[in-house]
Amino acid sequence: MCGIAGFLGDFPAGLPAAMGLAIDHRGPDDSGVFTDADGRLALVHRRLAIVDLSSTGHQPMADSTGRFVICYNGELYNAPVLRSELTRRGAVFRGTSDTEVLLELLARDTVDALKRLNGIFAFALWDRRDQTLTLVRDGVGVKPLYISRTPGGLAFASEIKALLPVPGLDRTIDQAAAGAYLTYLYSPGERTMFAAVRKLAPGTWLTIDRSGKESRGSFYRLPSPDPRPLCDGDIVAGTRRHLETAVERQMLADVEVGAFLSGGVDSGGIVAIARKLSPRPMPCFTARYEGLGHDDEIVADLPFARMLAKHFGVPLHEVSIDDRIVDDFPQLIADLDEPQADPAALLSSHISALAASFGIKVLLSGAGGDDIFTGYRRHLAARLDPLVGLVPQVIRDPLARAAARRGGSLSPQARRIAKLLSTIGGGGDARTIARFEWLSAPSAAQLLARPVAAELIRGPMQAALDALETHDAVERTLALDQRFFLADHNLNYTDKTGMAHGVEIRVPLLDPDLIAWAATLPARGKLRGRTSKWALRKAIAPDLPPEILTRPKAGFGVPLRGWLRGRMRPMLEELTTPQVIEGRGLFDRDAVAKLRDDTLSGRIDGSYSLLAVMAIELWARRFIDAPVADTTRLTQQGR
Image 1 (tube, rainbow, N blue to C red):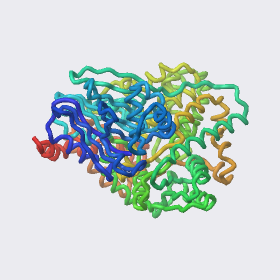
Image 2 (image 1 turned 90 degrees about the vertical axis):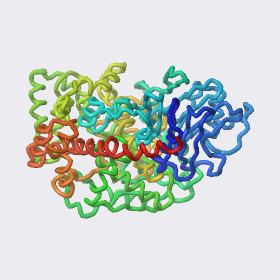
Image 3 (image 1 turned 30 degrees about the vertical axis):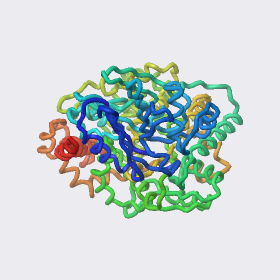
């Protein structure tokens, strides 16, 4: 796993060094730069050596003919199978890296090869003969890739911070993206906070030539629901088989592999299978809360994590978490590249740092189980959607508006009921999208100094729903989970928090074959009664204690409401003063002040919306204000 960057166009000679320096945390083991003859093409690489630790894995790498050069960030899990096939076709390999396998496959089959890849990746391929640059991102979006079209040409990078040194980069804020971060805590689709920087969509490729002419295509689409008449035995056996294959594939490494272990079904199931595959006990990592007191947002994961570690006979390393973690929030936003206001990312960062301190470069994560097999409260709500639709809209709409004004002093259960009621207005698609919103899109738009239409904020999700053939509310919700909540939120912070510490985080539950299998399951294989992830639970039941299988879902919880009234309050007050808000010019001063005062007084529960405002201001300080002088100096070097 690595970091990549580069460009095609007229840029200063010192730019590759500046771009590489910005992402050196992603690859502490090696670095390399390739520039074509006239310097208009550059590929920059930072290497985290996991497969083939020798110099034969050095990048950028040229194929055996010298025509193609690749700059690759990823892991190709079916590389051994492809290597055998390529050997039969006459390929001769210099080393054992998956990079070389991918490169030789692309040299023979070009973009037709992309459909055959099982892995997580983002890469740039330079064709020296045709003078074309092709950028590719994996089908689920596990690995990030950002692109920007500037006056000098096209630039790309694993992280936005590597684009900051690019001369002529337009730093205008995308108002619709700002509204999205306030609404969802992330930006669904291709938009970022910079109007001039876009995410390459998962499962797509983009080719550009020296004249600037572009072509693009798609090689992977998330599978549409295709329920089959499977009996329960086949559902369980098939899920187990695909899960075992996925975990075995993703343990491919020449370094020691560890795992997150939260004490839940997803991470517990992965460790259970990995433990059977490896003779050496897998080191596991979890969080231990200290000094936080009683808080309804904290679920006691640790006893279950310890239970599982003892059950599997694996070492469990615990990182201590207390309210001092909030001091890391500004650095977290810098690491994430995007103003994602989810404090769960802080825990992922600290666990990754702990793993790195033990020399672990690879962690298996349970991310994705809820998004493929169901697991969130919105899936239970979606199942009730047909009944909700029977209630006249003239009754539902006022009830939804009243629930949206819920008080911050409500009990946890009452808050959840209020949240559910706040999403029942409008048509079916409106209800589906509303379940992803922390703050309604219209309310988020009103926080901005220059409001944008709510339809623009909701546009990517609505377009995705319009393209779906299924009318099942649960499946439509899962489709948005997989396309947006995963790629643009969970996987972004998973990648960035791991790579900030030189740790690759792998996601076996998002193996393409496992995703395809889940799409074939009938409804009862996912959500049965109030039991979510039915197939997954049954598939791993023989390996887990019953207490794990029956415990309620718990994510990475943090006491955000208490933090904003306690240790985080000085940061909140400083970032939301009238002077700061007016100086930035992005938010409406009075609207932010009211949100802050009503939240702190308990009249409303706007904690996550406030955190989003804070995250955006912190992001702007790091990505708009501070870097200008530094990156100008770096790009001058080598002129």
